[in-house]
Length: 84
Image (tube, rainbow, N blue to C red; front, side, top):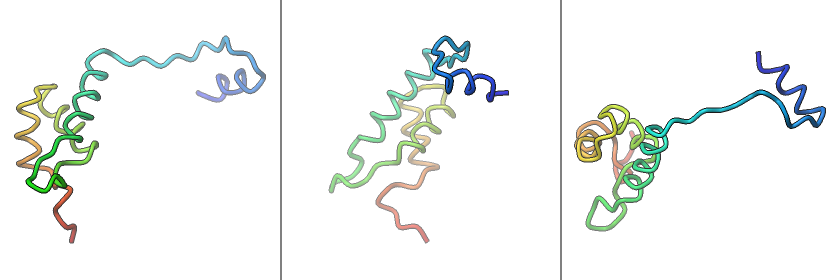
């Protein structure tokens, strides 16, 4: 399915009809996830959650930032937690 689009690009034709769409809600969740991942969650400043977990929390909570924080505390492993 993708090969014909790539073949056109390899030939140097930049008018390929291949387009990627990203909606506003997805971009907003990504920005919020970056903010959540950068937050200092502990006294030493080394806590917090990875970006991927923050994205998951925001998706699970329909973009609600406060609900996503609660979701992370309840379900996600913090960076400072050792993995067994």
